[in-house]
Length: 277
Image (cartoon, rainbow, N blue to C red; front, side, top):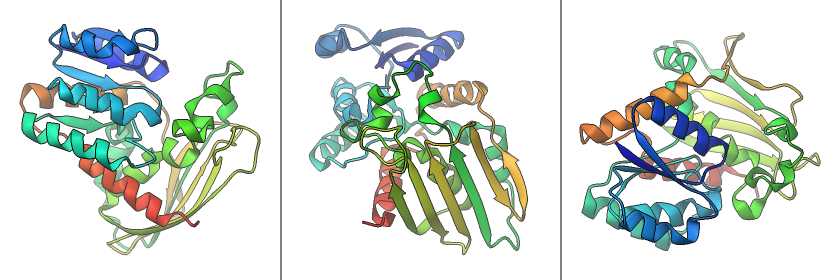
């Protein structure tokens, strides 16, 4: 399979390594070539495109792939600020060209989350989920304030940077009824975005989820607590490989993917509605 990756930062490089290990041919388009992306896409036959650029650029780069009839994958989050005209154009191409698409949800491919999905949750009324890690350590190069994560104009902020938590809890428990969450900037690890989120997610099945996300924790922490039992979700590359295997298999077999742009957009809308202003 011939694949193009738009954006070649840390996650773009990870996907490239994993895709090559799966036998794909990968062509990257980074900042030095982005102005020529349209010509590059027109001049080659790509079976799939990955968008791994800063969040504020996701929709325009997805549109570029969709115009050329290329199935696409976009890293999370799909967007932070909803651009209805761009989305409408993308939806039109997706429908007219039957484009298979998916938004990054690698925790759905983690064994801990897979095991959790098989839980019946009988008698469970409340679950706590937690993610925290000092943003200064994410890349450990002293340039954290240049990251999209730290800048509102680039779509940063812990709320959507850690959208995995919102995603996996709805994937496991089912539809969300509503949210009640607050955003704060209490440290100096970002330029102008929130570094702390707290609140509750109310699932339609009656379960209440206590959620905490931050850019502040000294050590990497990702876990959930059910009935007093804590389960950690440790990072690994296998979940990214399984995510790409799933995507490639669906494209080869012409099957639609879970967490397509419609599903991802619905979750973002739900989060935005739940943020206390």
